[in-house]
Image 1 (tube, rainbow, N blue to C red):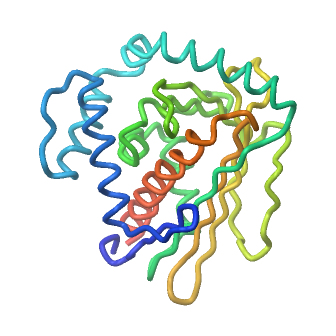
Image 2: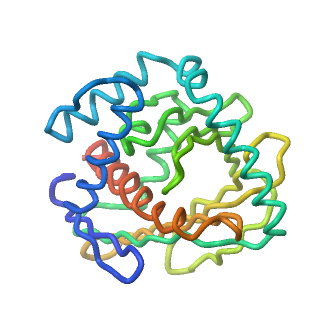
Length: 245
């Protein structure tokens, strides 16, 4: 079923094909291959994706965190500074996905089930820039990834029961809402938020994806992260539809 979804992404003012997003993913996968010392990546993207997931799972959380420790520490300090300077103001990163056939409304439940069950493979597979995606006993999610154009991996704590400001308004035309507050540390102030909105249409689906960064986040990083969003959510929607089919 996933092969028939024909997903397109609106990134900025441009409609981007699935092949363009897959090309971006292939380039990022090659960069992460190099970062993890994995040698020359295979030409086939699926093989490249599967090998990355297998290697990350083999390394495990502790080893990945050890390798990325310095990057994450620098990113956390930068996040705290940008959050303080922004004084609650946000810079928005938004992408819209449209597909033919299939469903987008089921995707957040697919993600939540994988998190709750500790099934990390489909979460890692969605983007080469994912390193760790796990849920703690208190329900708080830890995500270690490279966001957008940043050269550094960062750790983000996401809580859907967390209290904090979400600036993006819910659109009543989208019945499924995924909202969470992001922090650079458990004791850190809210650094951002997400509001992802999903709607199944008569001929397919629409997903409107928004991340709120601190206002002083460089614009080039936010623009680059739109490709990250298009990549991971297109892959997750395809996976959710394949699982449901």
